[in-house]
Length: 47
Image 1 (spheres, rainbow, N blue to C red):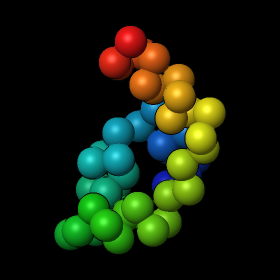
Image 2 (tube, one colour):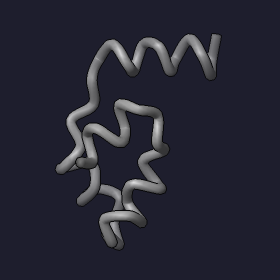
Image 3 (cartoon, rainbow, N blue to C red):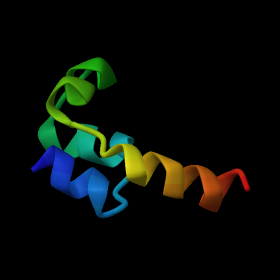
Image 4 (cartoon, helix red, strand yellow):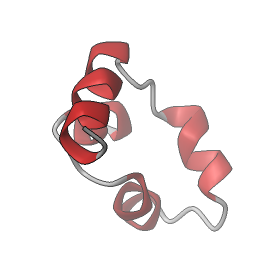
């Protein structure tokens, strides 16, 4: 679920709250980030 939410654009901080994690590191263990989505986000937010 975490991976799917992040792939659809949900910020990881919101996924963290949704899953009830205190530490974002815990959320990151459950979320597999798609590399192509990282590139798209970089273009969108950074240029």
